[in-house]
Image 1: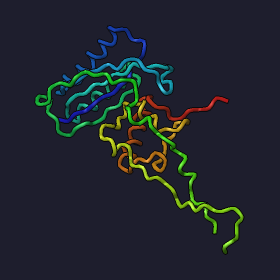
Image 2 (image 1 turned 30 degrees about the vertical axis):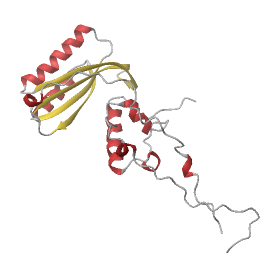
Image 3 (image 1 turned 45 degrees about the horizontal axis):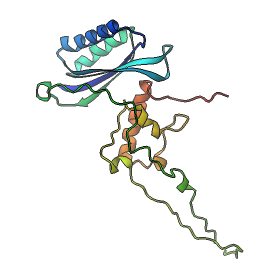
Image 4 (image 1 turned 180 degrees about the horizontal axis):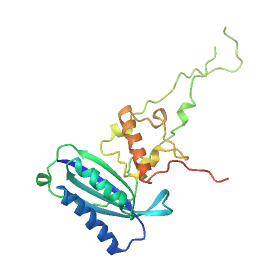
Length: 136
Length: 86
């Protein structure tokens, strides 16, 4: 089994029920094809960097699961057919993964802030100016 | 050859502080394509990826960074381009 994550975006104006239906559908696709859902975390509505199918907002969901490689094609086929899904990306996290041994993961929604430690960009571009000024 | 100059020349040879890659320096920092806010530090105002010589990333982390930025663009977390309105 491999560990994958599928990060996808659904229409922003879906009701609670509709979001539940989306969750049920894709969990079902994974589980009925021999995969195990490790975590399913709705990240909530976010502003998009560019409009997608005329939506300025999107509702992001991150699903991690363990499955074989054949399941990805089936899951992505389902996502492509589903009108509620605007975009998705599947990334392989681990080549060798056993969900039984690792248990489920905590459903943490990451904060909206950038990671600390990056904000300090002191005098970033200035030192390129200090090139050699010896002409003799 | 050597010209006499009236004003004294400071000889400043390539005074370049070599900074280390911030991802090597701090192992708590993670490069994640889902973390658009962090990735934005490595984009210009127009949405282009900042080159290594400016961002001071090492080759390894710059590679991870560009991959993460491109994935984030696919998911509309980061812009492909920002058009200036005139």
